[in-house]
Figure 1 (cartoon, rainbow, N blue to C red):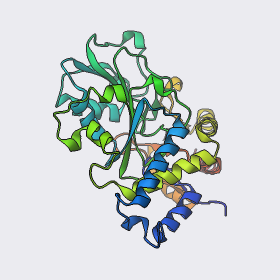
Figure 2: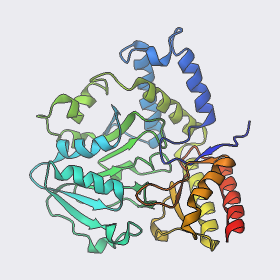
Figure 3: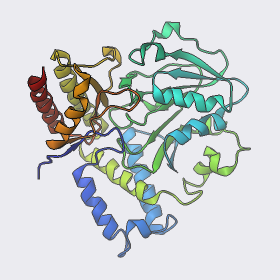
Figure 4: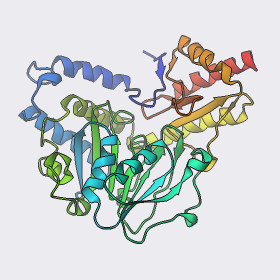
Length: 358
């Protein structure tokens, strides 16, 4: 049955319909009549599922044995603290600030280590990034941190960043949305609730060589190495969230993998940006070189119409288009699960709304 309701939330975000159906089955009977929400994380049934889901993710993202995968409780923001706690040594930590999330990550790191801001895009309201030739990169940094896609401002770094230091990247809103060469990164992490499932789970993919240099004097719950040694079951795992992510991994594979996702996501974002750019009623403030495929902000010509736009959109089945509270305007988040039909319906609505109010 065709979907007529589209959720453009930045996260938690849209879940594929077929995955929702499978979630219902697991809630009813995951193993021998027991619901997924009542099985033990240490049961053989769930251990087997956990092993299978990790293997699925490895196949999906082409992750070799040089990397460990951690399925951790909580959100990606937790990693803003754990990363400097695990990998800060005697040097400084390089942070590229390109939006709200990389700024917050740098503020967390500042509490536990000396940090160096390589470049800060706040002066242009996070709509562009200075040329890398002007960046102030440290000679002795313990790692280089950046956020691949800033969900709040809709700014994305499309190509890997080269650094002589270990590269750590927040990929919360871009993971599995296109192919990447993992060899360009020493650690990537992502909250699951955008492209990989629901809230409550964060996935950390970390090079074992970097993991071996983590601070072993940390309490175990804060120590990535301890989680890796216990196969992400140092304590009670986020069983249900992990289960949903496993279903999403399978769904992505069924769509043709990250290669197919990349082609579709590029097509979706181009369709919406092309409409915005030709419009005299809507505009996007981000430099075209750094426009996000996943989060597309746009501004109405008349700010006083924002509430009416949102209400009218909801009336026709288009939800959660209101921009982030710190930025305003509108924002369409179009992650993997958003079908191109949702983009077309949004454009049709935007066009009709503009004609009524221009």
